[in-house]
Length: 209
Image 1 (cartoon, rainbow, N blue to C red):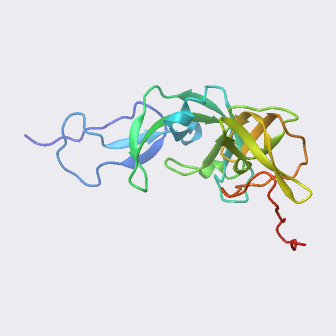
Image 2: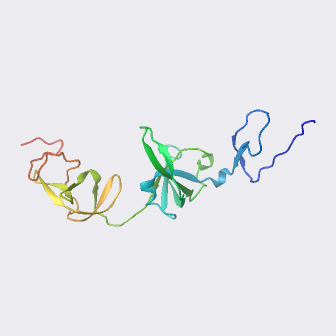
Image 3: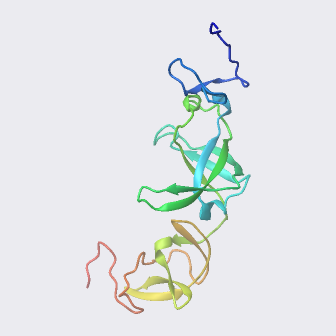
């Protein structure tokens, strides 16, 4: 029996994103041939560590960065959904990680250059899970645990003093201080283990007297 040409119609409007078949040949029922999508309806998929994903919720604001290089302005976006199931990912160091996909919608796609973003392109995102005003924050490397108490080393006239503090929200880089510390007090970041209360310290760039 002579072969017939069969016309395949896409169920959605868009453009071809990926060709699974590069040449002619027999195929089985259900075998993917093409992937079709609408570039104007693009969404961002970010895989979070599961312990970070539990802090993310639909509606959280997002900043989309480095979508067109280091110098382009960040774009606003919103978390659309957090997928209910995770998956195992092997890190570059060979460590198994549980990750969860978070789907993000850009707030505007009419920014110059954004229309050239395509399927599989890379962007960086910051998800805002908490925000506050008039917050006293310190570098995370300045806060440590001592005798079941969060503490910092502050500097008073060239001497290190331990000050217990109460912390609030925290990120990888910053920690909110609720009580125990005033603004503009010099702190020691990543204090060495041998440093004790009352130890003499010298600021970088200064000479010990």
